Image 1 (tube, rainbow, N blue to C red):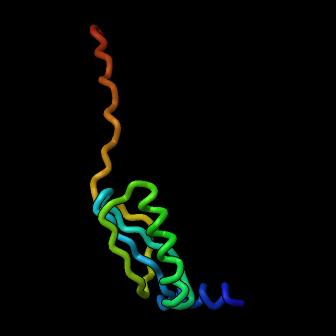
Image 2: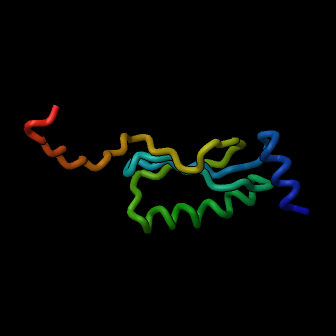
Length: 93
């Protein structure tokens, strides 16, 4: 029953989420949805600990009513691997 209520709140944008922004890497993470701010604040501590254990730095966390379309947003450009040079074929048209 609680899960159904959370899903309804999320659909209408009233569910609570934990938003954590990090300086290194430059990302925004969303964790949730939660039924109440109290539930989200209780869970927030564990998410912060997990991100710090993974090496994230400069964390800023807050709880609010969000409706994120993505759970992880990379704020810095992602470097794609450089592709090897294409071979040159002589004598072909």
